[in-house]
Structure formats: structure tokens, C-alpha cells
Length: 114
Length: 114
Image 1 (cartoon, rainbow over the protein chains, first blue to last red):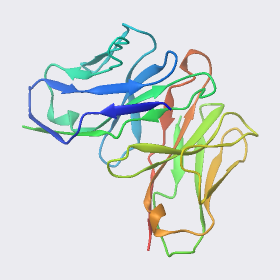
Image 2 (cartoon, rainbow over the protein chains, first blue to last red):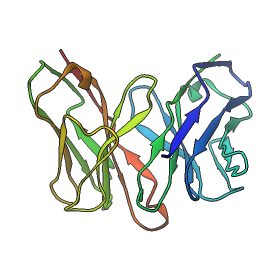
Image 3 (cartoon, chains in turn red, purple):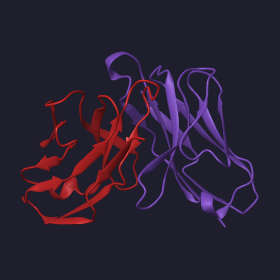
């Protein structure tokens, strides 16, 4: 079945450091890929998405590129801020009979210190 | 627009008690979902409703029932709560067209079963 694997956390960085959170997936066909962010005490919010190979999703300084050859969708940000502290989830939507349904990774906790 | 709303925000139950979690969306979305979030396990799909009048099991349906009351509302019922159902529950919805797989989440219900 479909699955998403994220790098183990938690991740702790200093402000202005470079961020990478790794995400790899297993799916049949051509899934859409997503990053969601969950701030403390809140629900998940869509951060960015990519729907086909080589697409780059971007939002709020975060970027991720859909790499079909390595089945990866790593999240990056050049300079993190304290306000980026949150839990980040990678997810895929396989389409077909899974129409609209998402499969999530386990989440990566990011803490950014001043 | 309020987006996706959930009630209650917090609930404590004793083993064997029953309760219903309520969810409503005002975005005219066709599809709605119930997830549970447990530490280190990401979000797991309990049930979903692809459209009004239909419901289907997700990854972890045992111990739960759902009702798609109308296009706006999708409730989750625990008939006889167990400590293993202690979790944070999220409702989500998704629309049509090119954004059919972008899900919008409610703020969650934190449930403790003693």
C-alpha cells in the first residue's frame, strides 16, 4: 500500500539556520505530494504541494521538489525563524480509488531557538 | 467563513461511556474525513465520506461509527469508549476540481478515556 516516511525528529535549530526535513514515499501511479504544518494547539494547515514530477511547491520561504526518480519530497528553508517551530507532516494523495484521501508520515517536530 | 469547526475541544470519558464528536464545514465541500493523531504515528484515517450519503472505512475504523448528516456535517461516535481511544481527533474536508485533494482541518478534539 501507499506509505510516507519522514526523517526522525525532533529537529532543533538556531534562528537563521538552514532546514531540511527528508520525506520519501511509496505509491503506485503518480501521487500528489503535500507538506502540512501544525502549530501548537492547532489543526493542520497546508504549507505547499506538488502534483507532478519535477514540480516545485513553495510558500512562506519553504520549498520542496517532487523527485520521482528518488521518490522524495524533501522540505527546505534557507533561514528559519522562531515562529517556524511546529510539527511538519509530509503526505501523499494517490488518486484513483483513493480519491481525495491522504496518507501521512509520522511528523517531524521542529524547534527553533533565538 | 469559519472553515471547519469541531465540538467539543476537550472531553474526558470513563471506560464504557459513549459520545459523539461533531464536525461542520461551510466551504461547500463534498468530502469529509475523521483522523486520529497519536504521538509518533502521524494522522490515521478512521472514516471518510466522499460525498453526501456515503461513508467508508479508513485505516482504523474499529470502535467508531460515523454519520454524514448532510453536506455540511459529519459526526464521529464512540459507542463504548476504551483507553486505547485516548487521542486527538481531527475532522477535515476537501472540495472539487483541481483542489479535490487539498484538505482543510478543524482545530481538533482532545479526548481522554480513563
